[in-house]
Image 1 (cartoon, rainbow, N blue to C red):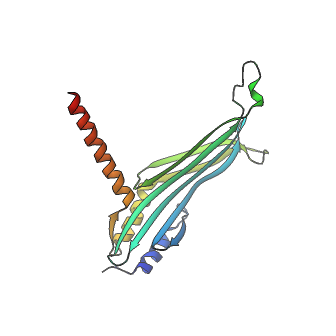
Image 2: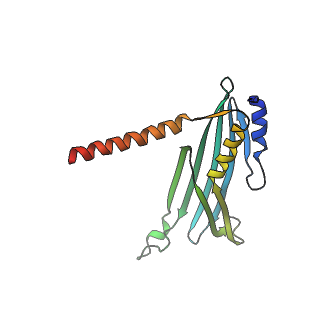
Image 3: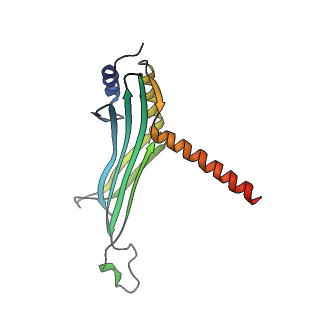
Length: 184
């Protein structure tokens, strides 16, 4: 027997613990569990750096059919600005600022294991050491959410993003096979 949506949301809200300090929010029929992995600013010898990393699990509810769709989201923002590490051989370029910028967003049902640590000069410029450290096991996070949903009498369906990803892979494989057949 399936429990109510409100009871399921209440149970999912209990997932938080010290190892996974999720920020939980509800908007309409979507519950979001957000894990802030890294939010750090630091300096290196000739540059200033920033890393922001967030992992989210979105659970969309259909109370009429007692189904839930799960989608994970991985957001990363990384940038650095400063002079080149080695400088210019003739000494003209160190006055010009250089930098790089990277932003990525991945959605769907993702399975990843990751850990990272970074060291540098802290933003207060008074100390140096580890500026961020995180680990992510999305398999365990997704399994915990899915098990709780199934044990509550609800069914799990694939999200639209996951379905589109599967169809895209199938299309790419068929297209590659067609090209291979035409070239033989």
